[in-house]
Image (tube, rainbow, N blue to C red; front, top):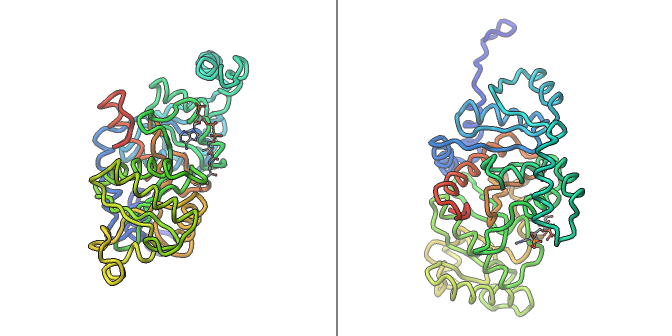
Length: 365
Ligand code: ACO
C-alpha cells in the first residue's frame, strides 16, 4: 500500500502473529507451531464467552481464516456487530449466540444445572437465571457437546470464571484435581511451571496430583518432564513446614510414578543449572540435564514467579493451561493479548480432538 508517498509493506494478521511469536520465543516457537499444525488437521468448535470484545473477535477472525478453530461467539448481538463493523473485521458465517434471545435454551440448560447441583444448594429458578451468565451457558454447551471447548476469562477475575466450568463440566475423576500450568519460554528453552493458577496451598497429596497432571501435559507438548520440587532449601538443608511438604510430595510421587525424573526439594536456580547440581548435588536425578518442569510449593510463589518473568524477564508465557478438566476449558489471564488467545485456542482444539477420539477419556494428552 502507498501511504503519504511512502511505500508501506502490509503484512497479514497471521504473519504478525508469527513474527511476534518468533521474536519472543526464538527457537522454541516450534512448541506452538506444532500445536497449531495439529489443530489445523481437524478444527473444533470453540465457544468464546466474551465475544463482545475486540481482542476475542480479532482472534476469532484469525483462527477462522487460518482454519485452526470454528469460533462460536457468545455475547450481545448488537455489540458484536458494532465491533465487527467499526474494526472492519471479517468473520464469515460465524455463529453468534445472544443468551437473552435463547429462552428455550436457557430454560433447558437451567434445568440441567439444577439436576446436577440440586444437592449443592441450587434451586431450579436459580439454575435458569445462572444460564444468563455466559460462562455457565458456554460451559453447558461444551458439557452437552454443542461446542468442543470453552475459552473465557479475558475480562473477568480468574476464580469467578473457572467456577461455572467446575460446576457444569467438572473435573476428570481419574485424578480429581485441577491445576494450572504455564509454559515459560526464553530464546533458548521452554520451562513448564505449575501450579500457577488454582490451588492456593496444596497438601503433599494434592501436589502429587499436580505432578501427575503436569507431567502428562508436558508430554502433550512433546517434551519429557524433568521435574524439580521447588523450595527455599536444597535436599534437606533447611527444616520447615514448606521444605518438608515438598519432600513428602516427592516421596509419594516417586512411589506413584516410578518412571518420572523428579527430585528436590531444591532452590530454583540450582534446579535449572546442571553445573551447580553436578558441583554440589551430583547424586540428584536432575544433575545430568537440570529441570525443565518446576512444581511450586503454593499458588503465591507459582503465580508471582511467572508474572515477574513475563513482565521483567521478557519471557513469553503460554497459558494458563488448565489441566484436569473433563473437557477442554481454558480461563485466560485477565487482559490477555490476541497472540495469547490464539495460543490457548490452538491448545484447546488439540485437546478437543483427543477427547473426541477417545470418548470418556479426559482431554489430558
Ligand atoms: N481440584 C478439583 N476439584 C476442584 C478444585 C480443584 N482444585 N477446586 C474446586 N473443585 C471442585 C469443588 O470441589 C466443587 O466440586 P462439586 O462439584 O462436588 O461441588 C466444584 O469444583 C465447584 O467448585 P466451587 O465450590 O464452585 O469452587 P471453590 O469454592 O472450590 O473454588 C477456585 C475453586 C475458584 C478454583 C478456588 O480454588 C480459587 O479461587 N483458587 C484461586 C484462583 C486464583 O485466584 N488464582 C490466581 C490468579 S489466576 C491468574 O493469574 C491467571
